[in-house]
Image 1 (tube, rainbow, N blue to C red):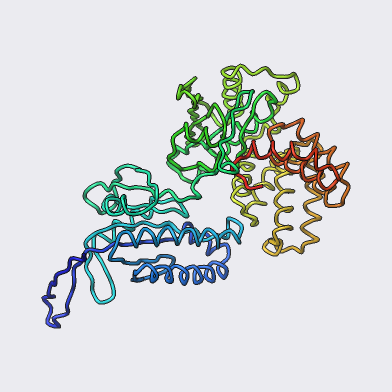
Image 2: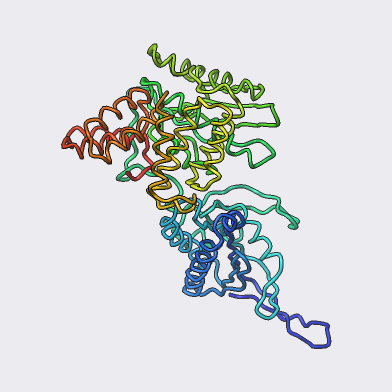
Length: 497
């Protein structure tokens, strides 16, 4: 029941101000300023559409939109159950809408819900209850919902939703720490097909989880992600291992989920966790290898060095993992593990920035700039050429070439130009892209032979196995395609191929 009482304003106009207990929903767009800078018209039009959708759902759940300045939306409900049900429904609907766009064009809302005392002045509401909702919203994942302890107490036996306790947080301008819970939405973590957990393979199996950025600068996130991805790439080349793909492993980025549960969902025995602190030229990498089936830490070490020695640090970690898992390497694999494509650390840093942008599905000139800078610093850096080729390839097929100021034909020409340069010393990444060109021209036998090369170089590349399955099917050999499709799904269980 709503508690309300009247406080009379001491001013001469005797305006009535009401205090009441309300469930407050606060929503905000992640990275709104950057979205506006990238594409103002698209952002404004999408925001209007999403606001309309959210307002409709708020009304359906007996709530009221109080205010919606900029990219923010504030609503009040008389029931915490209604507020949380509405928040979950909003995120489900917005996820479907966002699926129509590439990642860098998506408007992802964070939502916070709190029950608290508020002051109503006309149509507006103020007070600590509103402030806490706003602070909790800032702790939510993009596309996620966080709630306060008071909200959790109201819904825990009334809603069929799972929650996860995140801990106590000191929040700005609030005296006491706030206990925060995350609502676990049904799309929070990848699931194996058919809801079945993958079985452990006969060979050692491992997932490299995203490394935590321990630098004071959040912009260094690309570097910690790059370290984890490069270790994953190195291990992926070893035929004696099953290595989970970046796509599935990075689905757990920023999520507080038990290591054993992650390992079960991905179907692996081992997890590599870590953190990176980069300050100027100094780098510190902490890494630990866990046997998730027994929760035993096989080893945990700290690696300190300078940026100039970063490749040496990566090699030490890889060799430590190989030794711990007792994996035997073929001679070719031993060569590949120590084969670095550039010795130019600045070029490598630019490459990591380009890959970060590419992985976020950002097909703007910013992505091209980072790869182009890497090539300028090291003209023989074939991975950077492959990154450029992939950027142009995606831009052409996703109809984003206009954002680069090019036509479809011009985009394809640039893709082929950079792919030709990448193929001088090809990685599996470049070979598969080259094979796709043959596939589109219906030269299936040539495409199959090319992809076979890629799988030899990187036996744990899900993209190679998936493209092999496609080429074999189109080439009239669907019976042989099945094992490659199954392997792609096994390496990348979170992807809906």
